[in-house]
Length: 256
Ligand code: ADP
Ligand code: MG
Image (cartoon, rainbow, N blue to C red; front, top):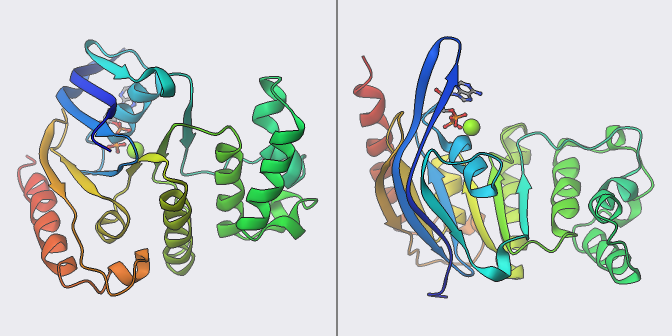
């Protein structure tokens, strides 16, 4: 830790279209250390996805700078709300899409894929088509597809929000554990405050659009058991939840 792998420096961004300009981000600065799990929360439409796209290099900031450590530069994994699995391919063929496209398929990649399938309880589904799996399983398959590329930095944009509440709790706990155990650095966007508290080391709260960072809150939970579901019983949980709730609802209050 304490070695930044990502620095966002004074990021500003606006969308331009026929209706004019929409300013989405203004002066966003923060850094993420290696191995950290950072959650970003903020009012709907404030610019969270835009920020993640800029970090991923999919959008150019209007001004400001994204600095990624050498090691992580070309090793960003991106996981979205929709699993985007290809229905005409088996789970096996879906999770090996990355190495296939980038022509980096090796025996080791195949072994890694087998290991991940087995770790995530999907090995016996490897020859099934996506539609034969539950929502949670498909999201796990999407995570395997991302992890097979051995990302140095994992960007997650509301990856659980398409799931029903029950699956969401299970899958987020599940995926949270996987990410934590792998020691991978992750940035999670979520509108679920409990999810942010139970998974992250730190929570950035964004102001409404144009977004800027309002709070940077460290999460230190004394856990009865070190699991994302157990975290919800930590004594500090409620206090953090109330604090986040207030920060976010103040943003909606300010809306004209
Ligand atoms: P969030 O992920 O926090 O809900 P987004 O980053 O998706 O917010 O969007 C931020 C703002 O930018 C929103 O007001 C949205 O309407 C606007 N926006 C997003 N994409 C575009 C686009 N392609 N063109 C114009 N405006 C956009
Ligand atoms: Mg979004």
